[in-house]
Image (cartoon, rainbow, N blue to C red; front, side, top):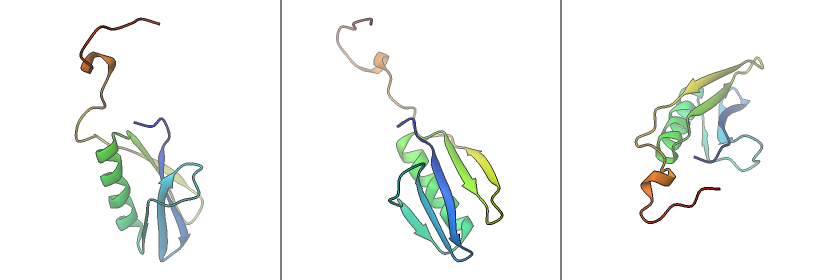
Length: 85
């Protein structure tokens, strides 16, 4: 989990991108909104991202929650001694 949210943005009615918010480089590009959302969900599940912000052609923004394929590792998952900050 990166702490940044994924977003689906329209470039036009036939061009949608998936990227991390604030990043200019798209992770995926699709010709439909539905395909872009599917790409974003796949990426979110693989990398433990919990949210996707889906923007519409009209400027609206919806938030989709994603259940990851596996939970992100925590300090409890790391073997060896632990140091408290």
